[in-house]
Length: 285
Ligand SMILES: [Fe+2]
Ligand SMILES: [Fe+2]
Figure 1: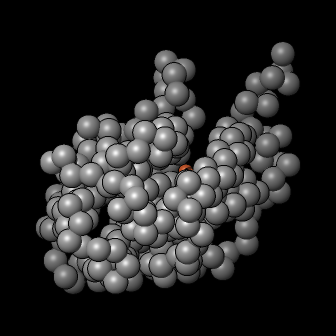
Figure 2: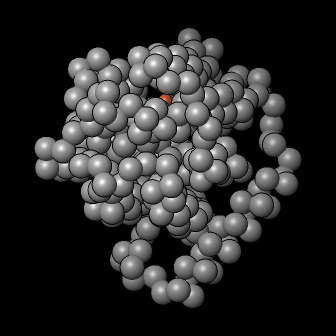
């Protein structure tokens, strides 16, 4: 998917809007080896779930999305290698992934392409990007920062694709917004749960990590702004939703998600590709 001018899509939020100021606090090696190894192990799990690109490639609604996902799968595979190399550089083996990371990366997999683009690409990879920006800006190791900055360029494209696809899907079918908002509330609640459990795994008196509550608030505010710009949150703010509305939205999103997962998976991929306007336009010349 490209912009009207043919240029690659840019994200609906800028890096500056997603940046958190840690006031000069730094991660330093070798002091922070264990904390960084735990963080990189969580990323490694997330990158391995890039294999889900294959699932969505099989269900891509058009040729352009399929081409994007094919490229994305190559990039996610390269990220696996990069995180393995970063762990090697720390001299630490990959550790287990936290259950909340597993839930967000694999169990919370979309039941439709719109759920995938909204929850996994725009929101999920958006969360990852926030942490990549934060780490790249606080790590006192030029080699690690370089690897993170290279991955950032690709993750920004993944987020942009998810945002624009979701925005277009809602413009075509406005009733999607309510369901995606319900599921987004679950995703935000899981992020907050994960943050509460971090003290079990990370030293919270660390100069960067003790700023986590402010970073978490910023991450949730960024996610809310993204929901507004995609048209998922169509009026007001998340705080304006009362407890009853939140519960109803979560139940509605969950029910629609469950129902969709039970539906037949649609037309054959060959038909999708051969019917695609990109192919049809070519065959008339
Ligand atoms: Fe990645
Ligand atoms: Fe990605």
